[in-house]
Image (cartoon, rainbow, N blue to C red; front, side, top):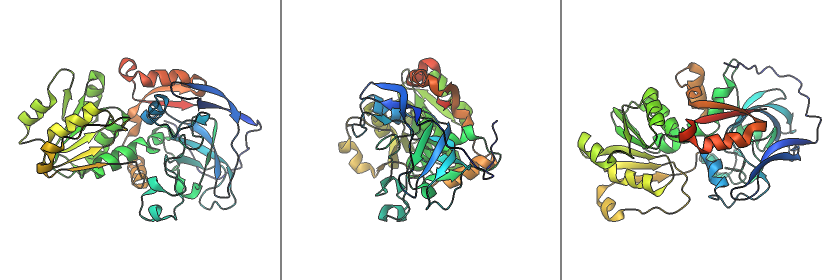
Length: 362
């Protein structure tokens, strides 16, 4: 387990004017190449040297053309931990040499949305890293609004595990569990057991549901879900999910969490949610789904969806520090930055490679 210290120290900025970065060149095209080293552009910026980063399902979505707002030439990535190399003159909460978690959401902390804790919709931020500006799959990254967009790593913490706090854990928790209204005694179903589904599984247990179904077509992931706390698993390639759940419950699940982002998994949620229940959509959808409103309008259900705000990251950081939450369980592979194309290949073929989250480091 790697340990880290946050005693301020003097850090030398990289002497080279270029660095290695994973660059998006259009649908289906990525390459690791030399790009200019980022610089402080505003007084609220910091420059972070990346120590560890990872790949998100959203990055795969960009690669597959799901996110046309990402322009060719953009460095991908919105997760990671690192050490601060340079700070803008207005930065108050951080110093050179501090080890930090990079939030996937950038927040100026002062706009109308930030005052509502809707940081995902910050008027000068939101999800911009690896989307609208260059991201973290590189040797260095510029972080705007650093005081509100970084989290100090506690002394002695496992940096590798804390990469999971950049995005997937707060996403699974906020968009799946909290928005889904999971309560003690609930029966819930998580459709999809990739990193986001597993994050929902881990954090749902804070709220003591009585039964947690995890549904997937990957037997390896279903076995992993059982180790992580699922009470029941269903292989949707081998079994009728609706028939099984309606047989084992009174009339469906209280909360159905969609954690894939394809029409078939959203459809499963529509079929298994009980009257008065909740469908919480986490998955990133690249095309329309068919809403069975003719059946659902009379069922008094709630449907929520959204982009993570990361307002629960400080709480999650405390649970990790206390040992209550162990996000390191999600890490299955390690790569060097020079091997990032191989990392994408492995992550993109998760079932074959038995991959969950990958860690990439210099």
